[in-house]
Image (cartoon, rainbow, N blue to C red; front, side, top):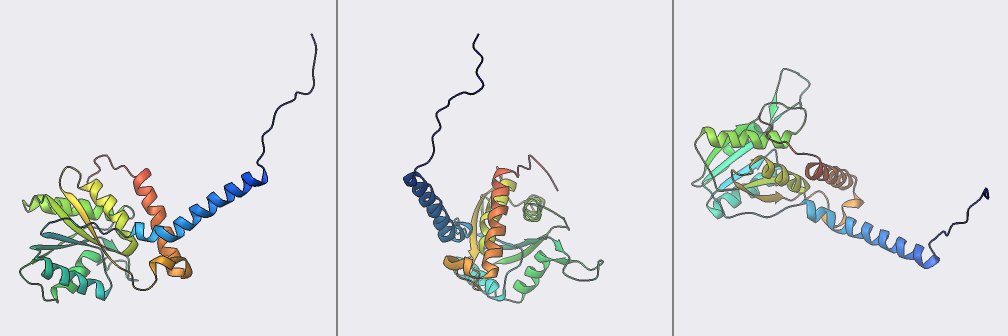
Length: 221
């Protein structure tokens, strides 16, 4: 029996053209991400319905846009949703985003549309999903069974909001999305501002988590 200490193997390595091809593909992926990720995260896919839901808080111009849409499209129901947040130094004082949006919208001129609120309690995680479940429970409690709803969310959070609301409302109602734009940075050049980088990267990670890892499987509030 012949004993060998070494063995010859065929090894394949990239040539200069192979490296150039790999680099070109990576640069193309990076370019497409920088160019289109913001517009992907900003979801605008409204459905024909008379029920509008405002998720969380908006900047001032956002509420004006919502009121204009409600009056223009003749919505019949406008409902605010949200959770308690620690926005104050007093631990006993609660700040609820649904309550805040309700108070702001109640000062606006809304024509032929009823304004409601469906505030959720404080949660440390899955806030948007909890708000969606609370809204669903509100519909059931008030014996309202909508075939479709439109949810208004702020900027690049709208894609993740749509994913989570659809998970909560599956087999109950179709969910359309309306996004209020963030005027503080350019979606096509988000990487040039610190806020744009923070928002886009955070929402990209959150969106991927919601799609890949978040499967509530009947979790209730």
